[in-house]
Length: 434
Image (cartoon, rainbow, N blue to C red; front, side):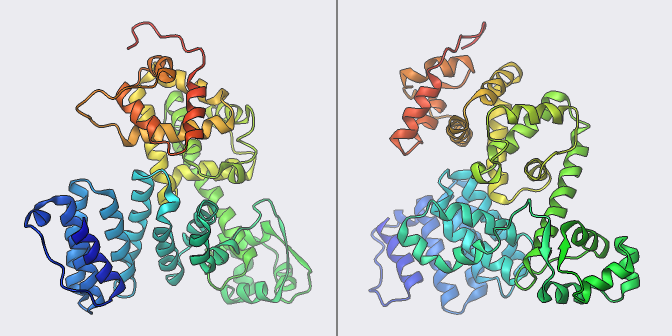
């Protein structure tokens, strides 16, 4: 441990240190130590202007870390590789930063501790003017609320920049500013072509571009975005154009996901929709309506009938099924693995229990579910289970040892107490249960 820490300090800080002594060849034969040694060597090679050598070492580190597995080493290697090659190999850098965000959500519940991973992704996406920067900016705003003050100060500039894209999805009218008109003119080679492509009247477009109208409807912007296949520039385009592009893309993805649901059995439809909800972070701000009372159950019932969404919240949730940001996708995958392990009857029981739970209890259940999926391995020993969880575990036929680990994965005592309270209800043991 001391060897790998010293090597990484030297590589990252580039300060003169005495030659690090390898106390024993065992430090290089131990896979976990070797991960950090490779990581330090890769960092030092890159800082010494040996990019090709550094990239090769990062790849070795990722391969070894993925085999062990070693989540910390894997995420650090992915993040560092993405950062160092973002100029030379932008496409690969983007792919590795996306994978780093996924693995951060896959292996760790407290994703804010990996804030630097999301900062790297935002930097790469902004430099490449990728629309997915808007999704990463949204995640950064959510995660920033959980950062300690010293970390918020460190990333203050990034957080402030991402806050600029916190627009109101329900807004449908915008001021027709000069900035907006200039952005539209850059995309419109001729009024006639734009009118035919968008279905808008030529005179109406002329009035819009010449500034003869004070406001522009969101629907008008969406018709132009769709007709002209406009891709926004997140660094330069005005907020109205970006906001309506996001709405247009969200609606398109929601419609595609609903189309896919047609082929699914009704039970699978419920499962697919439930994991989307369970994987959505910061639901109080993103899904304030659906997270209240029985509205989630009502929404799921309507989706069983393949009814179209009735609000921007419902569109947002359905769109996640088509393409979710990496962190959210990891959380969705974990929830899906948990439900799959339950089996048919137990899954139905859990679904009904979840839908009738209070939203604050749902958030605790979400964390328990994800940790259960993360730690579903053969532990090789019996791990004692809290008495308060016994009926809950038996009712849903869960593995007692894995449930115990998932319970103690809650770092806050208040969360463990709430989980115990949730599990202390009247849970009859089903016939044939464990």
